[in-house]
Length: 202
Image 1: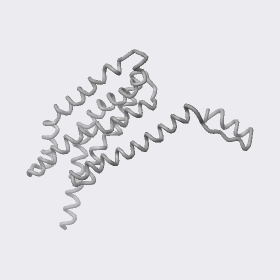
Image 2 (image 1 turned 135 degrees about the horizontal axis):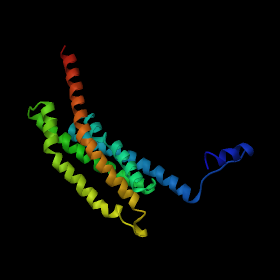
Image 3 (image 1 turned 60 degrees about the vertical axis):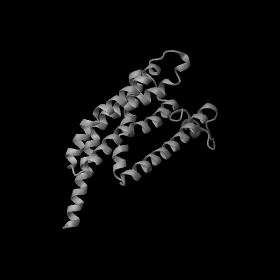
Image 4 (image 1 turned 180 degrees about the vertical axis):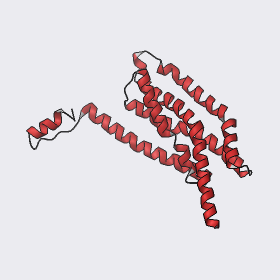
């Protein structure tokens, strides 16, 4: 309607204006409020991570996997044959908070090793090995708990399915990205620190 019908009407009748009311207006208002809430949630997550880590960069590494969770959620909707809806966005907000847990476990373990004098590469390698099972179990148990909702066929549960798909598939996809991408980003950050330290010493 916005692309084809309304522009033609505006051209044919100068001075004509339009606005969406009813259900469409409620949807737009809900999405706007949801995006504001997501922004505030991400800001709070960043602050809560930056304080204990005493770093402004490591929280970005941890939160970097959130967009990949969104990709997983979209893929999940395509696989299951559902369209994105407002409930899907609710699931994405919930997924954003859960996805950081996996990255948090890796970075925290690597930092603890580094403080003991272990080289960064060995520390992040050890973190990947030691935290692999907890991360995988956390993901599988979460997805397993959501599976009955995703596969539910009753009419009463259909409005919840998009939210469960966003949460389940988003976490599943982001977990495998986390296990590969977060250690890489951690080492990139350490290399940058080493280069800056070397320049300062010179």
